[in-house]
Amino acid sequence: MVIHISQELDVSERRACSVLGQARSTQRHHPEVTEEGERLVARIIELATHYGRYGYRRMTAMLRQEGWKVNHKRVERIWRREGLKVPQKQPKRGRLWLNDGSCIRLRPEYKNHVWSYDFIAERTADGRPLRILTILDEYTRECLGIVVERRISSQDVIN
Image (cartoon, rainbow, N blue to C red; front, side):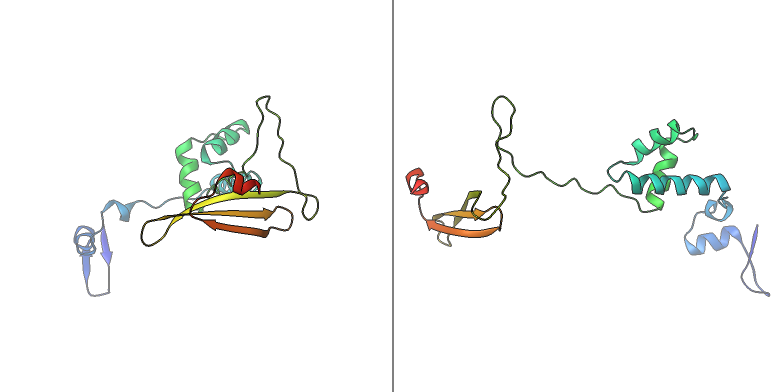
């Protein structure tokens, strides 16, 4: 194959590819997009928007159930080309559980209904520890109190 750069100069494919630093196989393969391929891409995008937490493997299984003859590599290639990604799973809020499996976490319904507290540990520049107790109103997300001490005992929390 001869690549025509200008009307006066003919350069061989081998020479042009070596100058450009390309593999010669890149000049020979011309991907053919068929109508079925376009329908497959459209269906993958449709499934990805409908089932946001599914990845390409589960999409492959769903497509096979629908009668498509695809393998996971093709679906993954389309998945990457279209820029589809599974969003990161959002962490659930911490739950308080009893041994019998029941949940005792109260859902706040009005101001001052449910409070939560948390301890934060820090160190000063000289390396000495600081303990910080924060108290929040779950409904308004307002900070009701902050206690900063070197040591905080359980009695300090209760009082």
